[in-house]
Length: 133
Image (cartoon, rainbow, N blue to C red; front, top):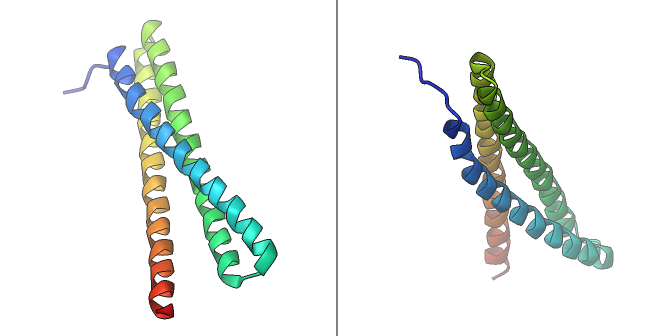
């Protein structure tokens, strides 16, 4: 039995995607500040550990950028889907909404990847601290 798409279906994702984008932005800003601080420390010490941490953070920033792009694209396609429903282009609206859902899945998958990288970096940091004790 096919699901009927109406104006409220894509609208339901608005708050979820908006909160997701806010969380992504907060992660991005935190990483940007951390990179700035580590870069300043690196200029003074030329530490290979700091260089590795900066490279790890740089990779995470690029992933977050992709997460944001996918999330924003998903939101835009939800709006387009609503417009298509409004003008009675049902089939096209369903296709566009499906693509929006796929982009949201991609965004969440990238978020999972970024979190895993973050956890691995923290584990290395903790291991380094344990070895120094």
